[in-house]
Image (cartoon, rainbow, N blue to C red; front, side, top):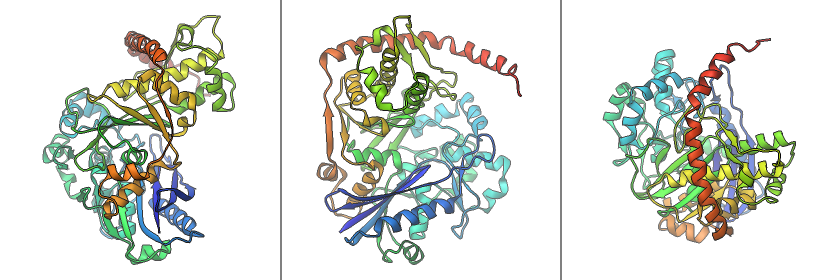
Length: 503
């Protein structure tokens, strides 16, 4: 028997076949297109995402002799995937990285709405949340809302196509209208946002105990799978990745070294009264949560550094970095390179990167090490933001291919890091969720112990950690000092950008 899992990301849909031992038998990937028809817009044709699911599922099943026991899936989170009563899209999906509602969110922020909501919801709002998008539509495209029956997420859209049911799981529903303690929609939050009218558009929330549907006839014909096959809606991709890599017990952390540096910590109780930032999500483990902080700059910073130094291979950056000592001979790099500033563990849209301590004595090797150290300090910064200390950090994403960086994060944080043998961690999370949801395994912790396989472990070097403990204090102090100048630099950019030639 085999379990078929789908991970529908923003730019790639993947179908993975797992055997009964949790090993990847076959993986098929299909790129999807994001459309940007106006400044700040980020959309997808909802049917094109479904077509990619159909293609990858058909392809991964072809040639696999084991019968499929069940289908489980995860997908990108946030955004707004509106459908009518007939289940058909009322327009393109508006994605999590869409910025059209930025002015609305800025007003909510300045009015204190986002801070107040965080104390109930545990999630700090941004322009790509369904609430902000629907407020923008009400102001700018009210007819579309009137034509819509439910505001789904990508996971909900796929569950509708698979089973014919309108639903959302707790992780997707978490932002922006869920009371994170009761895991039910909060009338108080709807009123706080001035959006009580949106309640009829919200799909019913499925708890962890109610994830399973049945493959309907039309979808079965398209996918070439049996009618009635169990279909499991796993959490969306961030908590699914934490499950897939085994970060499910309190104190275990998962860091995705990807486009962003997304660090999630398994916690037992929501942290609602710290600095409002990041996300607090039902983790897919009953009664547990994932505190997720996604810093804006990740491996894109490495690509930027490679371009500056004329390097074609990211391995060369690690190779250069290894030729110098911890601390990069006094260079300190603050990797806040996103034009949107920073959102975790602190929030400042004016934040910008900097390199301190340069002299003629420094080489590419020093810069390479400073860049990787700076990114590692950001990971530690996010780990330290949780009230529950991390006991281990499980690493995934493209950056985890660098053994040097994995060791560096261990040395900087003082916490053991590890990597998985699996290539598709989100799909593995869907696999584990399916085993529990269908009663094959009693709980997620048991499933993780049985099916998550560690490739290698990186223990912190005590001497290096002592050095980095001192350097991290410097990193934090220098950032606070430089941050005092961010407003002035932002004003300067604003003044002088108007003076640039337009061609």
